[in-house]
Length: 218
Image (cartoon, rainbow, N blue to C red; front, side):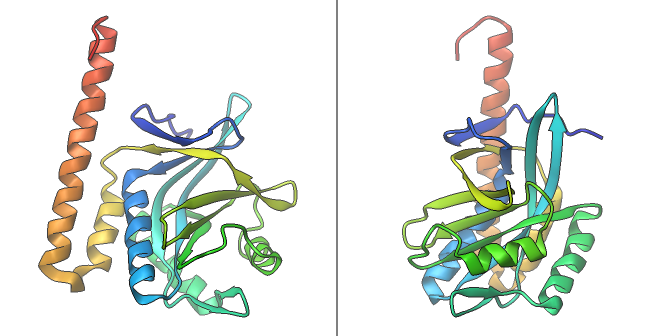
């Protein structure tokens, strides 16, 4: 079943490249949390990306609606270490929280990260994600800059921009809560603020769409 192209979106960068990438807002928030943790502890952090790769009307789309933290991500000699145990754990959590979701790529963040994959990590990506249009997201935790790469033409090609989209997304919300229970009240307060912000954004965008249909200006 084809996913409907999201209407409640925010454009990030130049989105003229193909495929078009859509990242759900809770996932974007999770990226930020991992990046903040990485910067504080000066250790790499990562996540497996959950989503769908589709083709509609001769255009290719990637929808990233979930992310699962990579357990104890290590780096040696410039290479990220993802063994069978880590992969199995990610697949199990994907099945637990996202049911029929598919792992379609990965996210890495660390201090002063060079935002271009080394040849050894390109090789790792091809081993883990041989499918066309799988994704690597690299984020420098020092300045919060990120870059998206897509597996196509036999390499990881940089994509100039993407869309952040907004929906309720209870699966990702439940995963975030479950994965951060140890943070107690502080994390619950942060999640409450995130939900409040998301509710406002959804209301505002829906109002804009409604008034546009009525021929009015917001």
